[in-house]
Amino acid sequence: MNSYKAHRCFFNKSAKCLQNLITLTSTNVKSLEKVCAELIKGAKDKSLRVKGPIRMPTKVLRITTRKTPCGEGSKTWDRYQMRIHKRLVDLHSPPEDVKQITSISIDPGVEVEVTIAA
Image 1: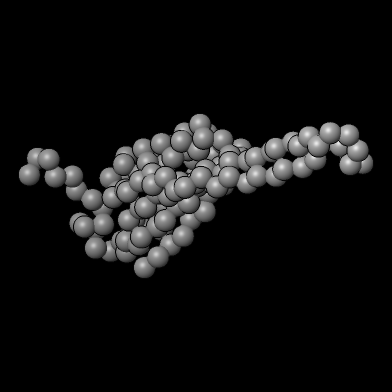
Image 2 (image 1 turned 45 degrees about the horizontal axis):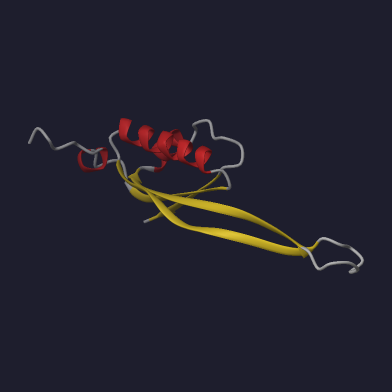
């Protein structure tokens, strides 16, 4: 029983634990992984049940355009792309704990979306 880690939801019956899904999206992978690590560290410090980060497929937005505005000359093309990375973190905790965990400093360019499910 020494290896068993007590979770707050199992022993504190007054706190209603909900499944919270935190979605993080960014174009910068380093800042995204940093925010994920801080969220998971904060959740584990409060001894909450955490699943993740779950890496979702990267969206690649591509735009191909002609270099010349008039259409004359050789047909040369510019190719631009933007990669959007996405991570999911699943928490089982009361809503007030999620507010404390997500109050960390979030790097610019990282979007955080919290979905609460029953």
